[in-house]
Length: 199
Image (cartoon, rainbow, N blue to C red; front, side):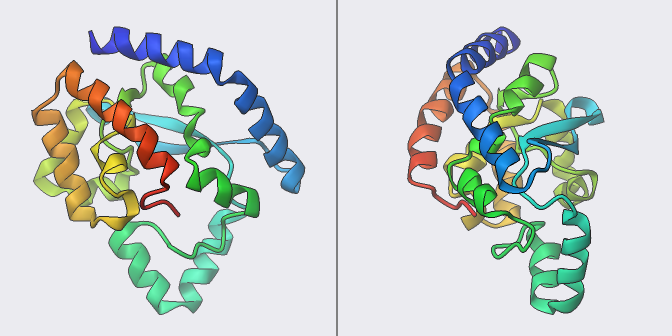
């Protein structure tokens, strides 16, 4: 039932949002001539790796820029170790910053949903190093497909701690229902519009 819902929602999303897709692709390409899309390896259902698609929001040599920034900024290194995110990330482009605030960078994940790698609603997709931070709760994460949206996204996103994020994912998997998915989707729209916890 959940998979049928995902296929229907992702198909309709790609159909109706295609003009926005084209506009964002053009903006990203014109901003620095790099590729419009970026695929980052994440851990999915049952531990299977997949390439989580996004519109590119960072400079092409992002890994090099990040390592240099962390080397020269101890506070940034501490923030990265705790959250795997940076509030002031030197890799993010001007166009990318806008896309992130509006969550438009994540629209290509509709393709991941059609492929069966993700779900419309689920835990936030993580990299392998992050999964270790879940400790015993990792078993719950691995039972579900990562989501385009979820409890974390409607509950403050980057304004909440990583431990709270793990708790949200665990609670979601333990208490899943299709009605709860619909409610989360409905709450995602105002959360995105208000840009709660986005950076």
